[in-house]
Length: 260
Image 1 (cartoon, one colour):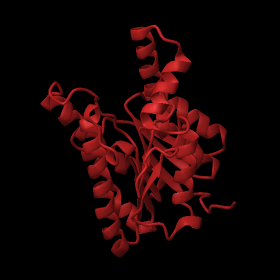
Image 2 (cartoon, one colour; image 1 turned 90 degrees about the vertical axis):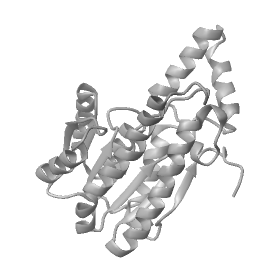
Image 3 (cartoon, helix red, strand yellow; image 1 turned 60 degrees about the vertical axis):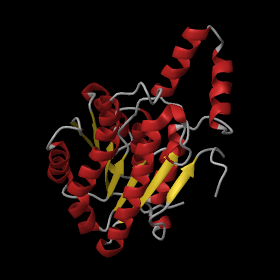
Image 4 (tube, one colour; image 1 turned 135 degrees about the vertical axis):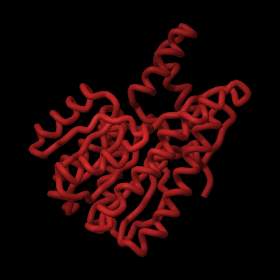
């Protein structure tokens, strides 16, 4: 299926590993050139090398998007390297799990700093470039925003805020010609997920397959997702095949969310 993405310029945050890297590589396969960003410069270069091996251009900008001025610097780097921007994927950010009564103000501030405020500031800085090319913005939230739980008070709150903010941007996008959507992935096979599995194996002495089955039951999903699952959906959303998809929040969850 021709997606009409050849030659498009995409910026993917948190693209040194995990979902961000999977999205970046999927876009490269469809012909996009990439600006990659994250805090791990070495890992970013590894992702860039993979993308260049696919015949696409890739530039890196190692930044902490929580820092003042970082979103604006990143957008300036995109304009300098590529001359414009067609696609922004706001992916960076993780939040701490735990007992609500034990989570500190600093835990909450850190959770919102990267996954909400950094998304918001980068969207604001990149909006003029996206408007110039009638581009597309995709925010990566998480199913915690649809199914809040006691152990995920920060993540559930942040992901719900990401979805609401995306809806607001989509309303603005109708005027400015920018497509805006959100994806809520369920549990995805990433380094973070593997660390959780390993920690639980060390704590309990139980085998990996049992821990995996337990997590899958916890999320009520048919299987763990993959970064390729997320990357494939993103490429479709931003493609010419999905230009009428606007203001949507899609649960990519293997059946986790049981309600309409």
